[in-house]
Length: 157
Image (cartoon, rainbow, N blue to C red):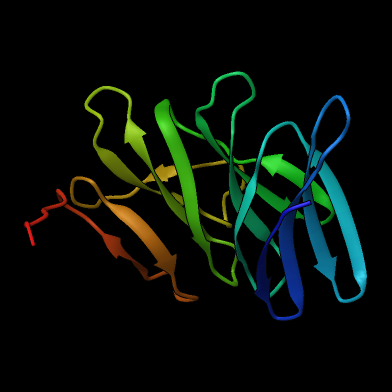
């Protein structure tokens, strides 16, 4: 069994791989105090962030495609987040209000676009008005989004 763990305000989220003789079983594990909940998932899923209310977000892949598919775990239920046509979408942060940020690559030109899943409008995803190749990495409780944007430039050492 391997485990990856994220913690926040008494909540813990992790992953486990239960190896079987024939098939492996991928699990998401959620702790709320002493209570642990196991959720079987079809492929590897990775918790990314937890807010103070115990809502967990993470990344996985759409069954059969390998394309990035983010998810949310709240109120004892694991749900896929809505996505736009893309070659892959990831989430990176959730604030205490439940607003989520992440990014995806545009299916036409391959550039990254910043995304927000607003808590006030469940079931929706918005493209942020941000520079080319925006990759949000955090969101404050007042909704301020931080991250990086623009083409990556590397210089030799």
